[in-house]
Length: 378
Image: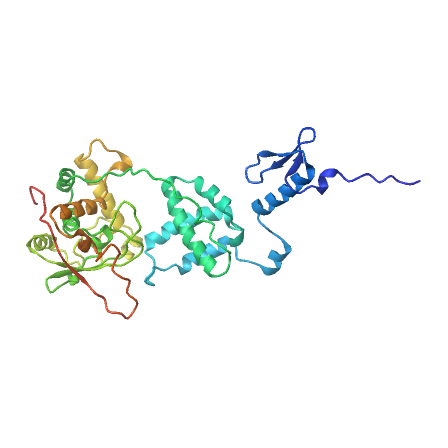
């Protein structure tokens, strides 16, 4: 007795994600979203279109890829972080590295086991679209740099992240007013008042204020080797990862502030304090027991802002931070007709050139352009 051979189901000969719809219609299932799209009634055209879509949308895992191997995103991201350096060859600041790591951890949740050359523009947009505007833009910047490195090593043909669009961010944090900052200062401890005064006179950032040492004062100049700059679009004097070298002439106004910073504490740092009891780990992270770190200054300043009620109409992220003193300082210097650009650490629109190891550092000599505008000094 001959057994009849049943025909194979017709769908076995169809490309993945192509299905028959109602009647003679065909439809394609979008592999990323799961939604169906009409493909018309012509079977051959539907098959051709489905195969092309699969090539574009489904990460390739063909035999050539298996033979050639490849670098997976998760592994490459770890290597990128381990080897990341500033443009001048120095290590990236610890806080910046933590930020990079946070962004890439989110990316690895989606792409860890994909080869670096499998990641498409669509996948990049899908990842970034799920983030807030500020997080999306920050992550986008890190990924652009990471994929540029991958392209330079021949691991992928192009950079899919560069074609994405940055999101518009609405500024929340407000600027300081002179009256508001004066009120905050009155409700600040002495060491924080000194930090506010130094920031207002010199226009330097938080990290550079806290790094200032007495040994930086030579020949009546305060030497500031700026640690880091960013591409913050809200600050016209910031550009990417450079270093500025500024010698600030110590005039009578600045000397008075420095005199107030001198006290019975034998600290190498100009800004210092007597700390409350703190953990052993935090102590070990400090160069000196009286040193003030970035986080403590920021939290102390926020407490003073709230205690003073200097900005009663602002809440949450709208409250100006210590960093915003820089914007007010630059405004006051400009208003006085002084060169805020040079004092901020820039000799032109572009930051002073990066210096390679072994080259002589050229300091930019500048003067403080204003007097402290506070009505009462304590």
